[in-house]
Image (cartoon, rainbow, N blue to C red; front, side, top):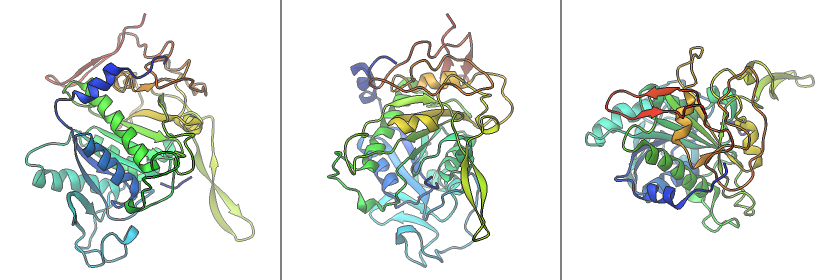
Length: 383
């Protein structure tokens, strides 16, 4: 993309991660290209944690493509790709010569999702189905509804959700594009930002798995968008372990506006942050802080989305938020379960990674039932 609670995580939760009966089958994609440092470190972290992760990603940079689906019309690579990871004349899809679980395809991120689901999985996974698709971490943040529609990383994610595959989009505020061979294992802050965000992503995936108890990691039609703050480890350790916080897409979010340069006669973009329209709270929990503001204070924003774009008549995101606890907490005073036409307060989290804040996670008698024989999620009854 354009670069533009109260309780600590318990030993019981850590044990639940370690006691997962089997590793998850995971597709790892992005929009920055299969050779980026972020995707390779995430892939490594997932496999190191015992999961069966496969990279299936665009061969070259595809930022800003959103959910656009474009399959290449060429059987071979005919123009240079990002980082020159594949030579001219090579097939339009293939694998890393050193790792058959790392695939590229010359298409947009959404097209790559379909390539993964309709070619790689049925032909090379021996009848196994993916438990989840994770995309990113993107090189640059994707906060708010505007970037949700614009991001190729998120486009790869909601393409999977629309195909019935649980999916999470991860985006990192550090927007510097780097090849995977440029990871700094001796960064002043302890680890390379790509390594840090990769390991944080594993925690969230495993929190979902622990709460799913063998069922689907997310109900059909739902996905999650995660935004990491700027990780400072290449300079210092001031922000290297940002806690996960429950957020929403609206609230403080920005969108483009056209600005004319009177000297050159050329238009460029600038940020606009309207109170209505983009930041109108309609769905979900309006007391939650917007992800745009949360990432400014060394916190990781976790927002739930759905691919049902009809006007809402329920509060379906609440049970999903229960699935990412206790790893993902709430900012103080947020998460009350209210709906309104205005955004929630911009609050600051204080303290360690959390379970819940006062008044969080309360919902009046609502439940989501996933198909028979799968996981049934029932929200807490309003006290």
